[in-house]
Amino acid sequence: MDENRKKLVTILVPAYNEEEVLNMLYERLKKLMDENEKYDFEILLVNDGSKDKTFEIMQELRQKDKRVCYLNLSRNYGKETAMIAGLDYCKGDCVVIIDADLQDPPELIPDMLKYWEEGYDDVYAKRKSRDGETWLKKFTSKMYYKVLQAFTKIEIQKDTGDFRLLDRRCIEALKSIRESQRYTKGLFSWIGYNKKEILYDRDSRAAGQTKWNYKNLINLSIDGITSFTTSPLRWATILGIFVSVVGFIYMLFIIIKTIATGVDVPGYASTMVVILFLGGVQLIFLGVIGEYLGRAFNETKHRPLYFIDRYNEEKETNRNLNQ
Ligand code: UDP
Ligand code: MG
Image (cartoon, rainbow, N blue to C red; front, side, top):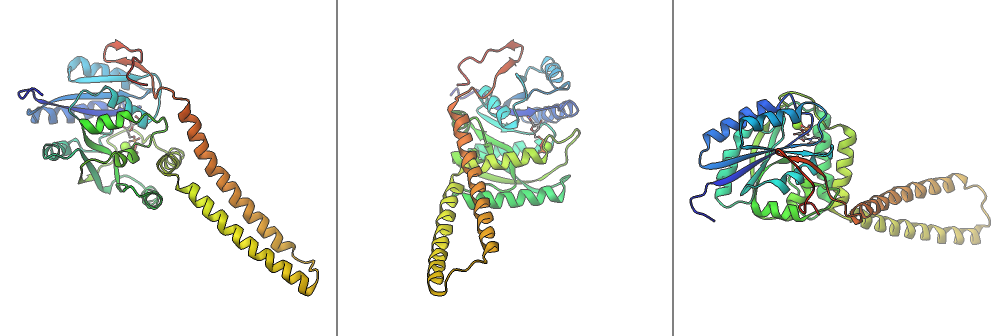
């Protein structure tokens, strides 16, 4: 590396319908860039198929300031895919992933850079508080982390979003993982490397609406578990063995009882209970197996993860970047 060259820091912002906040975000980032002259900066805005003026605003920002780059995806793919698209196109020696809505304070970036210089590869921001979120969301999120952690040996970082700084080698690692149903939070843990945690207070959204609803969250949670661990399948086997053993003992008991005391007609209730219970358990685990089968099906199609409409002023075809 050329010793005199300043290090390039990419700030990666996935954005979906964020017309109300983009200018504000740019102002905050501009201040940050001006205050940190030690580095060169690139702001990479990824427009994830927004239906409002987000893309126009990105173009205007680039006209004003060439440090702003943008990537326009061909439709809305979801934040996970928007992030990998951004990683594919980022040029920096490191990248900071940040939400467009200013819930992640950009003022934390100099701290992250400081730890990066000390040799950490993945500096992630952990939330001390979550302003502007309902107790139900906080509670479900807490329970979810517990469940996910119970399922897997790899340590999951609690209360950590995607707001983090990643060294080039983490970027390359994440880029090499081309699964289509991505659960990036899990991948950050999975790739390993030197991690450093910093604490912060999460602000409320600066403007606009959250794009998440419970349907998305449930989907993301199921993706999280099924993409990360196959232990639900193991549990199915264990429960199956347990139920069979109990069933077998009960069968022996009934045979012996029938021989000893003769035929016993009443028993409708217990039969129904057993049938319903086993039916339920079987359906649940058919569902679990189906989840994994579905994932395998989607991954074997080997589709590109996304298509790009434009990278800066250029119209893009997908080139080789996105196998
Ligand atoms: N986002 C995206 N594509 C989507 C949904 C969201 O790129 O389909 C972006 C969104 O613009 C924001 C970030 O992901 O920058 C986080 O979204 P949001 O603030 O709605 O989620 P929350 O903070 O409520 O978890
Ligand atoms: Mg948000």
